[in-house]
Image (cartoon, rainbow, N blue to C red):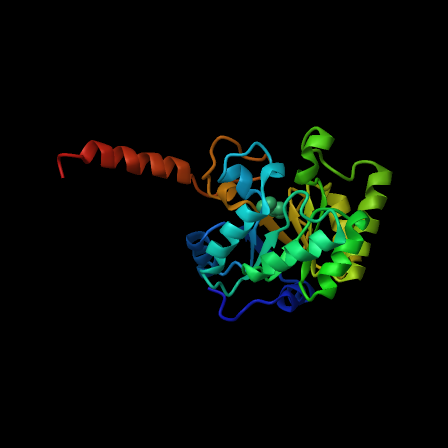
Length: 256
Ligand code: KIV
């Protein structure tokens, strides 16, 4: 259990102390409470909720109302962990939308908001920060752009892409992002970004040298058995446990 409330400053301090940051998704009260009891300092109501809970094919279908609903449930756990939420697809296209929706998430319990993109969303990022809401960046493979990109592709293989990632990370950090998620970035580029910027990098499928790691909890716990990303090593098989428990209970009906 986290013994004291984790703040964005504490997450930054962990990087300065060389302490790796563990981050996981939590979309409801029970999971937020359990992960907080495990001492995970960084929890995210990610728009991955759309895929592993709501059954959408990708995250572009997730709405503000859905994120707010799951966020309120997670926030009721009152975790000592820092709790943040994703701004969903198309909710931050303009500065006024970005600020209005970030405020809605803050009102629903988010202690930070996360949005996907680099310098192209800098005006939105600055406006969110000017309104006193901490911001977490998200670079590399951007799931909200999966339809345009035609798939989930590794980023940072070409020189131009590497330079773009470094410049975007620097710009977000300079603007005041307290952390930056790096998704499917080639490990040497993720390492270079982590060494260059002062804000902690939180990797997902980006190698071991990020300042922290984030996973979708369903992937980690084997709770969504129909698809597991290649870079995830599930540490449990909750889907199998559920099936075993249900089968045992079904067979016991009438005899116990
Ligand atoms: O939506 C999500 O859960 C995320 C993380 C896995 C980085 O963005």
